[in-house]
Length: 223
Image (cartoon, rainbow, N blue to C red; front, side, top):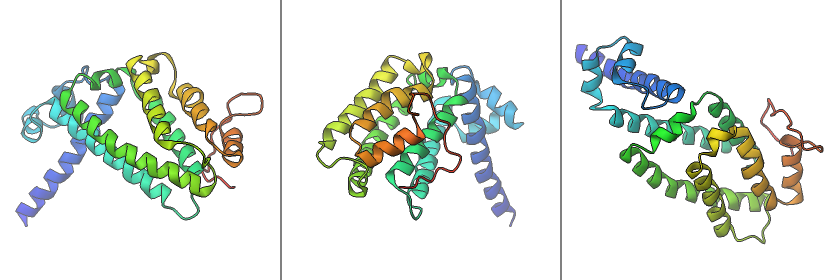
């Protein structure tokens, strides 16, 4: 029984460390946070922290990996709810992205590029994300929100290029995520929407005067 309790404690400690470390990394940037800071935040010894995670890059890698997996599960759960459409998913991603950006120190994004294991993981993860995006685009066509006469292989390249440009030019340092979403992502998305899709974007993202419309509290979008 005692061994079982110790194992359970270890599992909970792993999760607590990842939660605390990611929160500190996101708020202050990765390089600004020391292993001492994480140990102090959790009121554990630095020795205990190093027993579980050999160094900060290993810890950061586990944080990023767990966060990606968790966000993907949450998105999949939302997308699979009865009655959801691709436009619901678009607005959900927008809402989550803006909310996360509001609490993220811009240094966090720059710092990630300085850790090779994390960069390699994100590169590998991109291939899986592209396959998921392809299925999403086809679902949008099937639901009548995206045009059927578009080469979506090129659309995937387009969005990859937009993302790469935003990162390489650090546009997130100059503009809010809300500005980037609305002026780069949504403008591009609107271009291959059908009239039905355009109407939903205009009603929920843009007003007729071009001013921002407050995000829906209830993310459900009715056709």
